[in-house]
Length: 447
Image 1 (tube, one colour):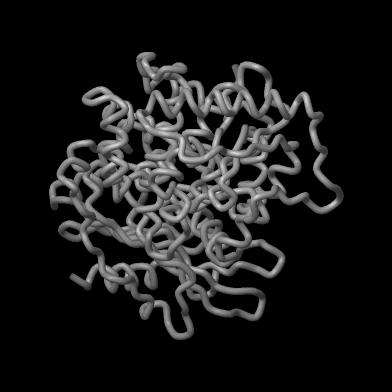
Image 2 (cartoon, helix red, strand yellow):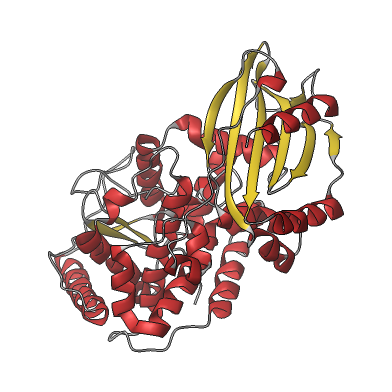
């Protein structure tokens, strides 16, 4: 069957938590409505199903909820109401929720950072592209604000059952572990929120394949990866979506599923429930079970400065991207095995997007400092960077792209470049390698 995305975290996670700027990124849960009743989008009311259809949906949901709860060893604390909506209605609800919960400046900043690192074309409509990608691939979503779930009305019979199981696991997560509150967007918590999103999606995805009693052996991770990547890439929206964004859409499911499968292998669903009492606090912990077990915390990276760029700059967004986002970025530049090896040395990081006003628009510049666990691992990443990038490259519209390694740290800067009022990009007059080198020195001077 065609594999669709089965939860609505993915929009913000794709924007923020799975990029170097930080996997769908912001990893707040994007839910469709803020009230117990689904809100009709502009242009018309939702069509109410017939009484017979309502009964069938209610009975199917109740049975599936009981099944996944029993398989997980959890109790159903309250019924979960459901609603069937069209694809257009679903994406309208998700867009409205996103705009309410996530600052517009944060979403815009993600697009600028993707552009600065050449992960998307400079003129690509990032936010619109995210919504188009999610609209094409989403199958259902659970809303913790309303404690209700929603299914898309165009799902075939093969997709409906697994989608119900997936979303009702999210309902159980919310009932027992306060999922909605934990996944509220908070500045400075991008990687932690991305880790929780991965865990939640991995748990729900595992339930899709575990059977009604939860006993079916886990699907191989590689099978899931190939299936999801192919489905998303071959969708109508996938043909027009940059690969970095497609990768960020599916990463929470694949990485989270691998983490949950490892927990199940050593202790079944009881081990998964136990992990909810101390969920992974970073994507590094999601990717490395031993680091989760040790509760290894990310290394602290000091705030990033912009004095080398001159006067008038302000910070639009600053956070930690995490190991998952680092790996996904490296995958756009290197082979997947190379990217995984280099990112595995990640110890901590910080990124920032700076901006200042200009006559024709605004100037923007991006900085990213990754701290590795050892100088040896930093040197390995440095050697890999050298195979792809010169120490500094001046670009026609995006300003310089430069990088430098010092001891444990690797710093990357991009820009400044001018974002024109019409959405185009142009190199700023002072954007030369001399400025980039001075900025790198400033970033790496802090301990």
